[in-house]
Amino acid sequence: MDPHPLEREDRGERGPVGVVIATRNRADRLAVTLRHLLALPERPEILVADNASTDGTRAMVAREFPQVRVLALPFNRGALARNHGARALRTPYVAFSDDDSWWAPGALSTAVRLFEEYPRLGLIAARTLVGPDEEDDPLNAVLAASPLGPASDLPGIQVLGFLACASVVRRGAYLDAGGFHPVLFFGGEETLLAYDLAARGWGVTHCPDVVAHHHPAPVPRAGRPAAQRRNALLTAWLRRPVPYALARTRDLVAEALHDRTARRALREALARLPAALRARRPLPPHVERAARLLDGAHA
Image (cartoon, rainbow, N blue to C red; front, side):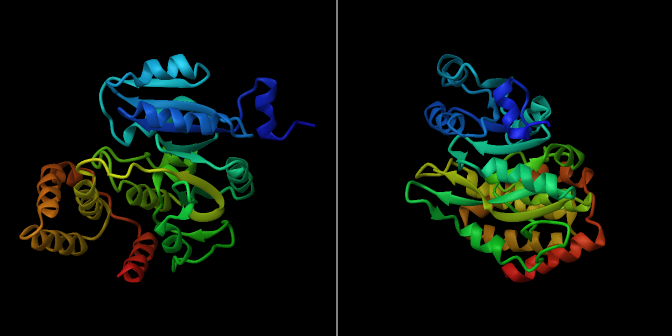
């Protein structure tokens, strides 16, 4: 009898799950993450997709973690580094970590079991525990209360959002949906991928039995709040009806009159809007209905 897929690693064979870590210039934090991931009982294959770091990240990984693969990108690709990593891994399932997050022991084996039990499952949004006190990320409650509810052919609760560093994907579904979108680059890029997976018929669910740990820096990277607001607007233009996108544009314009972050978000969104319009592909009606249901719940 063939061993459980997570035991194949012990025999030198490729396991069913790999971890992709997108990073840039955070070698110290990455080293902590790698120590946690290498201690997992699942022993996943690990690939660091390095966004052209200049702080010695690649040399550090080669010196201290020779068993970890590094995909050296020639320039900063943002969230697209995950796409490159997923293509390079070739494991049937891919877990994403950031350089400040890792998976709880047993989480990846639970994810593999769910993917194998539910063939339509495309992405698992994990429960995220934050910091050394392991406090629940506020997103956990939002996902658990999703009005989309359960589906008979999926585990957990259906959602159209997740935290990238606490997600596991079926590699084929992820590539089928196109992965993370180049127009967004980084910051709030998850909703668009959830839309695209659902539009292709893949299930996106919150499964709290799959647990990730996140230890973010006390101060977020400069520009991230503006990038998240920029990408929320671009996502609307990429996939939502024109009246909805126009309304979100008017909202951001109004905020920009008195808010510096909103002004930056609007300026960056307008610069990327032509590319977004060229890539525009409205959601199928059933996914748009689900998105509107979630809009109402969040409002």
